[in-house]
Image 1: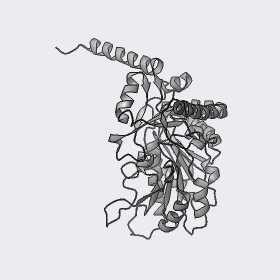
Image 2: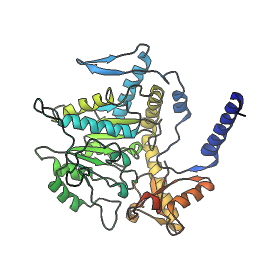
Image 3: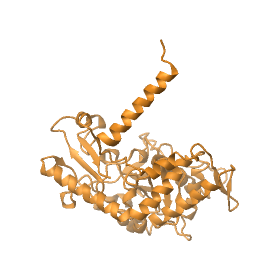
Length: 398
């Protein structure tokens, strides 16, 4: 006999309570892509804007809203943009992406639209000719790969049928760092139109200033984008991409940045730059290009988290990085194989990567840790063939 409605409801409530107690009080969460927002942030996510709409776009120089009853959330969005502009020390912030992957896709759409500006009437629009990114097997983020958000936005090589994507070369002595000498040669040879910095297995800074110095005098230099999804909450202490020459920063607002699950795009393109129209193209791809309802209650939570981050940024960031280095050193002292550069304390971020193949597959070790109330995720290391034979465990102390 089918369960009654009351039995279904009671059973679900009991399971929700049990799971919440376990995840929040009874286990150690070391997943690097998750954080614990404050109760103030969580309360904001329950507030009235949940389920409301506030679509808007710039029309004839004026920001036009298409719903009534949204004066409050309109002010919240403006204030959140201002808070985050202060956080990044940048000119522009687009807050309507609801995830980091969506933020990246919006940029790819915007870049493609920008590259097609000025094409002759009747000329077919084109995709990006060549993109440079971090190899997925070397820690690159899925959303910056052709199988992820880059899908459909980069041209294919007719000879191979594969997308025109070239990966950053990595050092032979440390595959977690980019080989700058080889990179300089590759840049001059390939001339990419978009360069995407950032990773999901992320231990050391990216060579933004180095690349910016090489391409700055090219007749048509590439757009420099930094996907900071994992290290957004460490902006400034870990790395300052805008000060190093990046044009665009994307990211998630719920990893090291301790807010609700959302995404954002930030820009710092000077008014006289030939790239200035790129920001307009990115905004139009945010709406109406990719979003309608952009989860207004989490937008309210993001404003609250931005207050908190701007107030406690320096102390939080210093503590996270110090904890990560001490955690890595402590594991090493116990005989655990820790990845990364020992000279840098094995990590410059919140992440600590360990090699566990001596004890079994990473997938099995992650399950054994979970059985002991330590939640991590298994990770393919640079010398692994696939994620299915991952020999690493990825952890974070944010």
